[in-house]
Length: 195
Image (cartoon, rainbow, N blue to C red):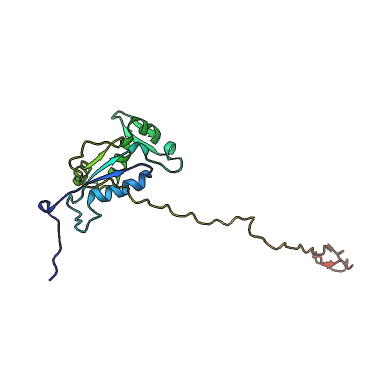
């Protein structure tokens, strides 16, 4: 008979991972970090336990955002007062605290429950390549796999498709014939003009 395996808290053996964020795209980096934090990259993944590892992110000031997201991506917060919604672009959040972009991105990718707070405590984000957790880390700095963006679809230009010219055919004009005096009806007949 098969038995279902559930990872218990006593069986956990969390490791410490160091990730270099230099040149990484923000959203793609956050998804990989969230998977490590939850333990989805391991065979013993159990959804209702904190089975993930610790993650240290260095060089968070060197992340990239694609497109015009530095100006277009907005972060909302509420002051607590009426009409207190404040929207700040990613550029200003990055100037104030570069680590906040990664923390906010990973938090949104974690489950919205009590596990969220415990899992998020295992994420450490630092500016620069120095961190105070040298004693815990036993693995070398890991550069995450580059995720290739999807290739854009080929768009066929309208000018590139040549259509055969359509010849216009002129129809002969019809002129109304004079009504005969003998007929009492008010209808008129049309005849083609002979050339």
